[in-house]
Length: 346
Image (cartoon, rainbow, N blue to C red; front, side, top):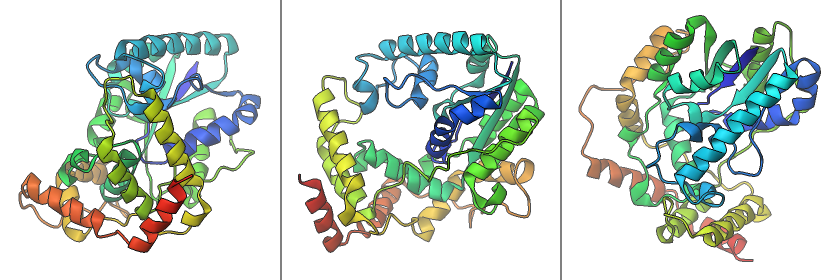
């Protein structure tokens, strides 16, 4: 049996891809394609399969702590889900199965592929990678929503694409012809659209055109800058990597975030901007090797990723931290924060 394994990367449209595949699973099944997703009894589903390969010492994230008391419990659940997937796909025997988990992106492919080969004889890997500058902004936005404090946010030099290593490792395991890398950029996507591009790739692997019946708009959208910065302040009293026993607090936090997400009074407020030029250059310097490799071996050379402006050493961490703080707090507008506060209170 054949498998298309979508591994992200994170912040490159994975939630939109998963929502579209789930919504169109019946139409896909009629074409001999099975989209398999872990049990919706746990959140977030993309982490369920990857948890089998996570080290036991890795702390549980807030949404995981709603369901598991220890990393061992999450790994045991992951094991059961892997076995359930193998049994269900084995019984169905689809021409093509699709799995999607951006949480697999940074993990070593060997153990993952060994597990998959128990069920699938052919494996094709698909990954989307974005420019490291908007990746950094988007990663900070997500981390803040997940509970990170200002001091916990990664520095510009610490967010890495990792695409070169991931691409090399999967190519070594599967052959270059079975690893598809796409650039998450409208100028590089088929039809200038992520889902058009996705279904084109699925059709090429399946051997016939595949089109979704149900459209899906972009999901997991970021909050406004004002809401994001208000949440950042809230995070000073929250333990993102706690040891458990805080399920009630996590649930109240989720209710609050959902209230902000749905608040009509926050519609149209500006979102976080890309960082200033100096921070952008630090990000590109930290990702210099990845950028050069992708431009040389993976991307259309007429649309290369922008490289760093200089080869100078990266500044001290304290200077980077202060620059990130100034960039974030420089987007505070009191009138917008007032609207967030009104929306936050029931």
